[in-house]
Length: 180
Image 1 (cartoon, rainbow, N blue to C red):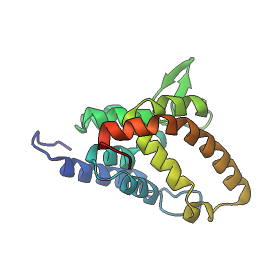
Image 2 (image 1 turned 90 degrees about the vertical axis):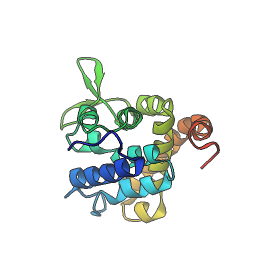
Image 3 (image 1 turned 135 degrees about the vertical axis):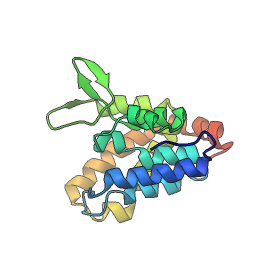
Image 4 (image 1 turned 90 degrees about the horizontal axis):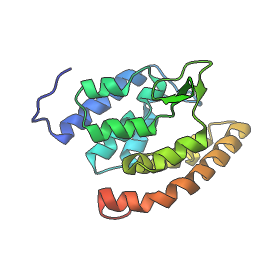
C-alpha cells in the first residue's frame, strides 16, 4: 500500500482504521465481542486530533497482531504515530533487552509498572493509554467479565491511572491546548 505525499490526515486516519480492522479481524475480547470495537471506542475518546486518533486505533496492532512498527513506517504513517504505537506496546524481554514486538506464548513481557512509566512519558501514548484504561474500566465492558477478572483489572488499572495522570494534563495541553 503506497500513499501520496499529499495525503491528508483524514486519509491517513482512514487507512489506520482499515489496517486495524483488517489486523484485528476475527479477534474477540474477553467477553467474546469483536476486538476492533475496543480500539474504535478508544479512538473516539481521543478526537479530534487525527494523529492521536491513529495511535488509538492502532494501539494494539503490534502487541496483538504479529505486526511491527517497521511495517507501520513502511506504510508511511507519520513518525509521531509510529512512536506513539511503539510507546503503547508492552515490550518483550529478549536477552535482557526490551524489544517492541508481538509477544508469543512463553515470552517474558516488560513489567507492567515499567511499561506504564514508559508510556506516560510519551504525550500521545499517555493520552491514549488513559483513554484505553477508561474504556477498559467502563461498566459496559466490566459487566461482561467474571468477578476475579474485574478485581484484577480494576486494581491494575487504578494503579496505572495514578502514574499516568501525573503526566496527562501536560500531554493534553501540548496536543490539544487544554484538557480533554
